[in-house]
Image 1 (cartoon, rainbow, N blue to C red):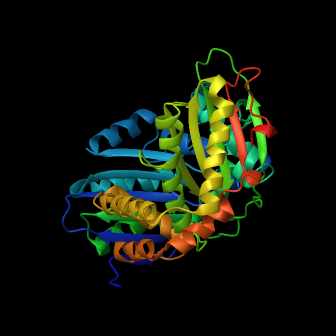
Image 2 (cartoon, one colour; image 1 turned 90 degrees about the horizontal axis):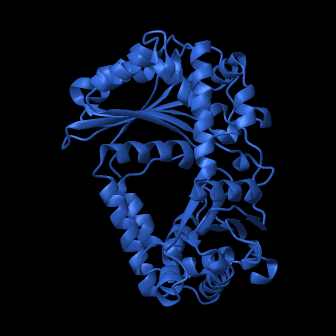
Length: 424
């Protein structure tokens, strides 16, 4: 395997991954923090996401949101951020000549936010609006209900946004203390891909970040509460919805599990496209819904294979019955070789297409470094996909698609159409 990237640690302990791509004219950079909602204590829920917002409200070099917005616009590309279950990311994509300016801004965001008290008060209102928007959006909220119940008591059950009550109560000290605890050199991963020079990039990052953190890394912690999947049925009624939204989920492999690729292929066969079993059975054959699909989520110690759908409330019980019946058939008989070949082609195509984007390259490198404890090139990834055979996928189907293990959340199921144990 040809090593196509540079792996480097700064004197302060910040991990860097750099992949030059000579054929492109842009470069993508991500500053990753190994701190997401999973790493919050019960009295810290929503803080990782809130900090992602508030660092954009002022840093020592760019002390106001207006100035940060102006600098961002002058980059000529784009800059953004997000918070997930296991990490937060601040990233941008620019032309090569703007790379120093992008590094300058991203470095300030993760090293020197000022957390102005007035700005924190204003941003609380913004995050509260985001929480309300999530609650109002059926697909978002039914997924939140699923996470809360499927991993009840575990770190994956934590809401990324937090609750309105929690966000309203956080003080400036709470926010600063969480930032100081988690935004440390050994919790940072910086990844770049595109039109750049490796040595120049490393030098720029080191000049911007080394010496800006306290030397003590003892506060860094990536501990999380163990996550055990639980079967459940949770019906939430809500008026003024024309459809019910549903999430059905089965336990799935964690990041580094040897069955991770097999479960992804199985998921595609089940509900990954217009020729998938659920699309053909539920929509095309029986007309029970407009949308239905499936996807896998992998985490440090757990995972989920989720089926998502929307339908008339009166169709919900039949949709669940027929979905689980299709899961039983797939578990008992396995997929055909033709189904597996189509799923492999889709997965290979998606992987190859994504590698033609500097942003996707950056995200792929970061994912492997943080979650897989190894970094392999696209050729090796394609080999692993092709090496997954029908016997393995059949075995995984029998182990995962067990109706007794399913978790189901619904939103908008009217009285009389709730999902009940008898529907399983």
